[in-house]
Image (cartoon, rainbow, N blue to C red; front, side):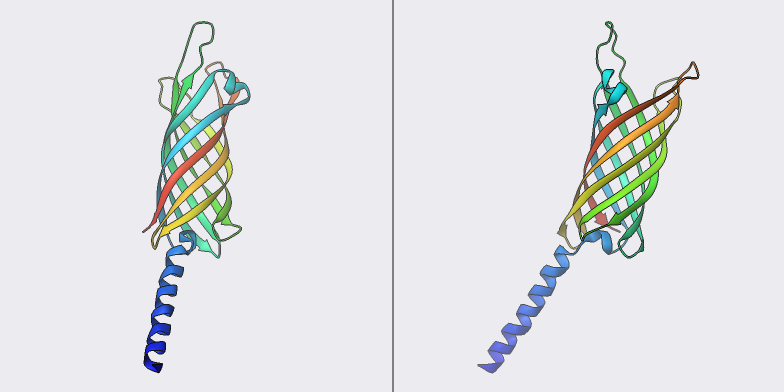
Length: 180
């Protein structure tokens, strides 16, 4: 009877350890790569011309300290234009950014990235990109997590008349992150 209780206790310990490993935050365990879908909701003056944006992105994270990751991302965003004076001009860009992500709680992070947004249309000018944001990761396996993030993103540039302008939007990202 004592052997059965001891065997049950040992089996329970290993079962609990395995469950704990599966629910541990992947952001704290090493380098990871994320593949995601991005959605953008234009704001401010840009919201007068653009209706909705969507695209995809790749992200990578490297832990550098306890709860702190260095990040890098690249993607593609396409914006549908509103009809203004009978004209619609859709636009798209390839944003490339680097930054940092700090986990304030086990799965919750705040962060920011800086970089550039490269327009895909002819004659477009590269814009300075900045994106502060927050998010949460839901561990779903030993090596993977589903991420839901929100950010305010702005792209500052000059137009062909050398006038400054900015595009800003609220961005949402749904991604799957897996450890490398």
